[in-house]
Amino acid sequence: MQTYIRVMLLSVLLMVLSTVLCGCWNYREIDKMSIVAGLAVDKSEDNQYSVTVEVVDIKGGADIRILPRTITSHGETVFDTIRNTISLSGKRLFWSHTKVLILSKAIASDDIVKILDWYIRDSETRGEINIIVSKESTAKEILESKAITDEVVSYKLNDMIEGEKSVSKAPIISIYDFITDLAGNGISPIAPVVSMEKSDSVKSPSINGCALFAKSRLIDFLDADDTKDLLFVRDMIKGGVLVQSENG
Image (cartoon, rainbow, N blue to C red; front, top):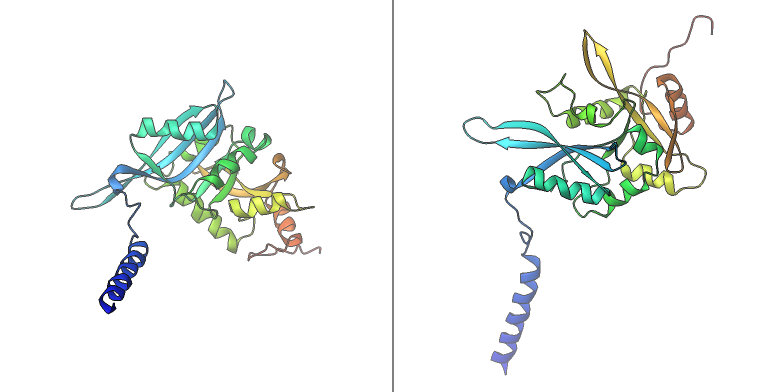
């Protein structure tokens, strides 16, 4: 009888351990995936979705190199467009290291719930990704900026947004924050704005000001000064400098 009980206890223990020690059940080789640093969503001329992803290729050898590149695909829905990207990259997209989602004015002026719905439903995406609105004609041209080709543009944009904690001329808004405001009563969602600014005859992305939404649609832009006032009203100031004129 004791032997039977021991066998039963051992069997139960093995079954419990089999559920605990299966941490690599979804293990995938990194060379079979494309790490997505950021994505830009536009409307194409035929009113389809156009999604540009910035992927990071890691080349091994004596010196490990990080090589960013962009891939653009089209489709009738965002999900369809993302899946079409796989046929262009030859690899499955890996979203856990994605830092920014850039929306064009055309997309932001439309109902962006369709974009957010796809993103929050995906099992690999994360809610802390920064949402940004492009003030240029497209969101794609931000990711394809030639001024900082030696860097990952998406990660550079993320650094700029994090730097706003010390400047407060643009809000720091994650997708989670945006959706929370969207679902709230009496709160208009906002998002930082990116545009291409010229410095020393070279254009590069710049984060400045914010985009105002009425529910899920873009209605207007605020400049840096008005944005700082808005952040004060909404108790979102993290830091920065207040300049008082001599005339008061």
